[in-house]
Length: 207
Picture 1 (cartoon, helix red, strand yellow):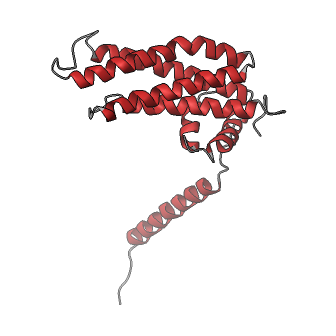
Picture 2 (picture 1 turned 135 degrees about the vertical axis):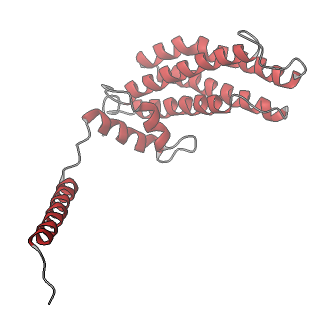
Picture 3 (picture 1 turned 180 degrees about the vertical axis):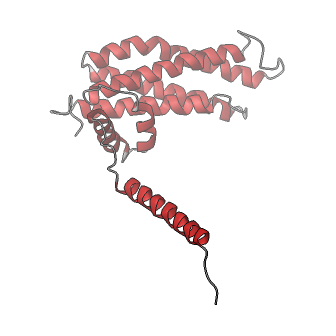
């Protein structure tokens, strides 16, 4: 008849002890409460679901990614100001990238690539306009002049679209696709936020 030694029995008990310990840890982790969202996070989520849920220009994920750092925002107007600031940052960096591509800091466009250079010069002017309009747009948002701000933002969205469209028309590969897409969506996001900010009771509440 087979028999177990004391050492074998002890090993089995040790293994069982480890398994029970791991099970207890996993059970405790599963039952641990999910950290509650901060009031700011809840507001941003609610606002993004409102403006992005039915938008044909951007989705909730883009909105959350753009406004995720907007701590302390008090409502749609504040969130629109954040989007406008992000648009200005995007336009400034894109303008600098275009300068670099055109040879401002080292030639990256071949001399014989006339189509690409022509498109970049057009985009340089378009993004320069967005940068120039930035302070006026920010002032309009902060001052509650939403119609004025919206007109500037729609102009910016059209500029980004025109920039990208120029490459398509010239059959040139665009080095600015990501920047154009972000600029367009940020402008449209700001417009959507301002639309809700203009409704009674929405200026300081996104719930």
